[in-house]
Image 1: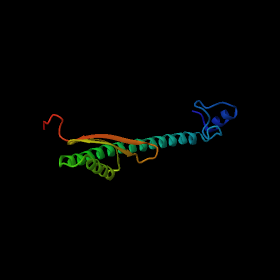
Image 2: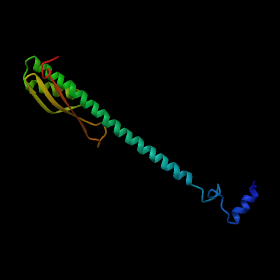
Image 3: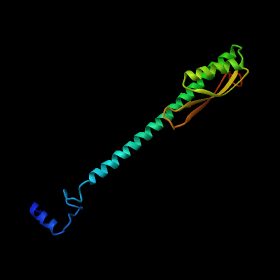
Image 4: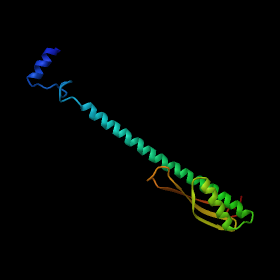
Length: 142
């Protein structure tokens, strides 16, 4: 085993430590800082990516819920004998209460088909859309 004195003498003679610069030397200073900056940057990128993904998923869930609820409300109007315009107007109100807007609404007979769009909470993520159909089953079976 080498003593501290022998290590200093070997270093002065130009010998390298087996695993790189001697700890505390000018060549080793700052390397941990560079590694930590890289680790922190990586964690920051992962966190931001996770938040963007969560915003998109939340907007998708809101769009589906708004489409389903608006479709059911519009179908209820049609089942009571209301007009297609009244059904689509009510669907627009229900969608707005659920942070959405009606992109398309088609009411015929006692069936309504609509498309709802919801903006994501984070700027730049985009718009989530969902489609819904409500009314009696197509074959008349329960």
